[in-house]
Amino acid sequence: MSKKNLVFSGVQPTGNLHLGNYLGAIKNFVSLQNNMECIFCVVDLHAITTFQDPKKLKKNILETTAVFLAAGINENKNIIFNQSSVAGHSELAWILNCVSRVGWLNRMTQFKDKAGKDKEKASVGLYIYPNLMAADILLYKATHVPVGADQKQHLELARDIAQKFNNDFNVKEFFPLPEALLSKNISRVMSLRDGTKKMSKSEDSEFSRINLKDNPDDIVKKIKKAKTDSDPIPDNLGDLKERPEALNLLNIYSDIKGENIEKTLKEMAGKDFSYFKPKLSETLIETVSPIGNKIKNLLKDETFLRDVIKKGKEKANLKAEENLKKIREIVGFV
Ligand code: TYM
Image 1 (spheres, rainbow, N blue to C red):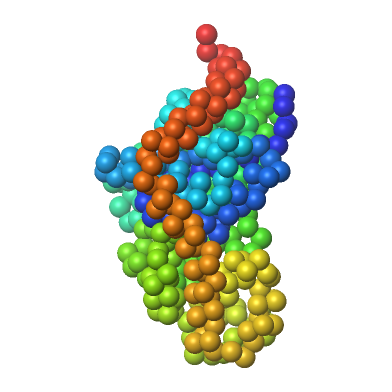
Image 2: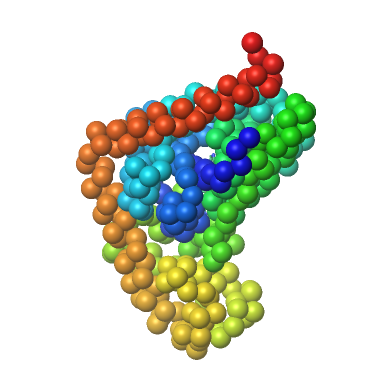
């Protein structure tokens, strides 16, 4: 049984990826590739848990691939592929549907948020989505999963499922218990309009988020309009407790600068947001615009993008089949 470190993570191809996806997850993918074997997946099976226009889905799968590359993931060193192209994800998800418990899924807060008031009308796929996520990770026996804080509960469920499988089938340590890797500085990037809500593609207002493809003018406008308050920037973190919007902007700035927030507070203490915001825009433009430009360039070469995920699929499939062979045997399939 190999206990080799292996990183797995996934991003849904549901259009315009934003600063939350980048700072909370993708930026960490890029640094992890230097020390560990990594698999990065465009999770299209997850995307269809809410209806996707097929034409847009195709475009978004390629665009998410482009985002991985533009952010700096090396396609030769790592595996980049789309989930539906490796059938093992669906097969293991079914097996894990039979291991996971209804009571466990009923506790998932993201289902409650996404299904909204009319739970009866949500797809069954949306409800059992965390089991598919566990399958994604366990199919490769991944040990480390870089994600934003919103995925932490799903990771805990994946660990429970792995543990129950190992116990039920008496195969101690067959599945490793995967560990969530959260960004130290900013595991939850908040909306620019409401510092108590996470930045999300599903929020109606474009002014709530910075998209990776935003041009510099958009970034300046969005930061100018970002909600803050009239108090100056304090010199300590404690004074930001009741000021979620201010805290969010300062966290974003610090993370991009590669500094801790205490250092930023030292630098900015006593200044107003009218002074800070242009600095933040400048910093964001320096980081986001080169990525956005690369995404736009990569999108011009669909053949290349298709080729990247095709090669990734072949490598992922080999690993998946090797593990699935053992899993089928353990479960008792002939
Ligand atoms: P998804 O597609 O919603 O988001 C992709 C990644 O971006 C992170 N993220 C954020 N981080 C910080 N602040 C935010 N505002 C923010 N918004 C998004 C997410 O936490 C995620 O890491 N279920 C997953 C995809 C998935 C997956 C997996 C992840 C499917 N299978 C297996 C890891 C391993 C999702 O919907 O992410």
